[in-house]
Image (cartoon, rainbow, N blue to C red):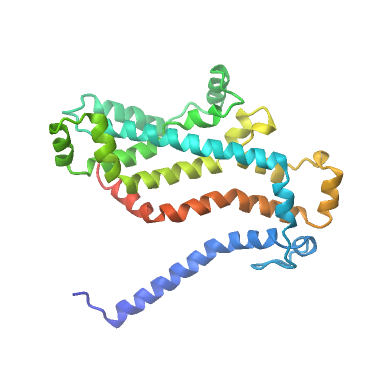
Length: 293
């Protein structure tokens, strides 16, 4: 039985209070941005908005959602998100499965593992990567955003360690029943590894959605920018020459600050929606995938 002394109860209360305060501190910036996006031009420009909209208005979102460049960048980001995450997870699973075997069953396994690990420690640098993308002919295309990060080594290491923690008897029984390695992988290993796979899927989604620098260096046309690259050019380097007369009339009702806040919140919304569905796998997947060596 657990000894529930007053000291333990006090510790639990303090612990929950600390976690609640930490969670609120993490939410405050997002709530502040959301409040600014729904506030009027005068209130947001004067810095009167804290955690609640002042003179509520949806004009900022109307302006953002009517912006064709923003919507185009949003579509590019969704394409990158789905295609990039699918390729990441497919290659991660296919590579982690053979590398999870013992050296007696997969000769050269240690050599292959070190080849992957070395790529985590050393890289060719930005300039060789840029020339490689140019010379392979995928520059200014969606593949330039996906293929350079198609093999996430860190995810592979986590998943192969998770595979190594599964009972070997399940694989042996599957092979005895006549199933091949492909069937064993997708009918035995993958269903049992859903916590780790869900966690790594979230990692890949966050990476592809938040990445912006590769879009700036690999894309020659603004129309092919992913959302985060587009937001960087709008928020950091706004081009006032592209503003039309209609935009100027609307900007009298909304401020530049509220427009930026609306774009930032829309950009963060897909990950905020996806995270609660994967949260229950998150901690379990990372811990169980990192205890085996």
